[in-house]
Image (cartoon, rainbow, N blue to C red; front, top):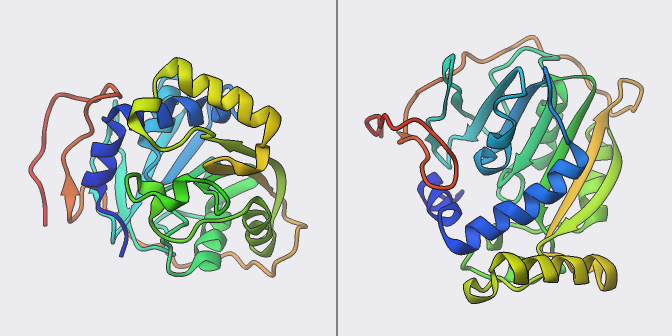
Length: 257
């Protein structure tokens, strides 16, 4: 059973959640400094990390697993969040230039099926970044954060899963070298932990980040699926729009069970 989207929202409005957002975004922006004119998919719960690209990206869609629940997000086009099964995405093949997966893999019941589905909806040469709990880090051992749920990964495990699904891994990095303790999560202290960890013990980060590219000649036996599910925009179990650390609309919607 996945974590409820309400708990994820609450975590990212906390002091510790703000620190996680800042430290991870620092790494993400070094990989993707600009998403100008890109179609972007956030799978899992990528709202804290993709919101800063809102003005430059052509479109950002948030696909949230049905067992997690969905929090409505808005753009000028209206609602841009969709509730989706774990390994069937309601999009045509070759739609997205970039895909970010966060809070999406650790509790996925069919990991390779999910990665294969993400491969399907990406354009050739599209880039995917996966952010997941590091099995060697402290954050995977703490129940105080969402990263303590599900199965953690090593960098090599993530890279291997991506290769098995037809991707070519390009960059492996880490984030969150400080302990998952709120009192030690101030910006200055967290920044110090990051600089120290990146230099002295890069393998013991709290999170691992792997960027990969979709190459049509990478193998994996992928076949384009013709079945495309109907999007469930604003569908069942939708929760209110996000607030707090990201600028979202003030209009609240009713909760659907």
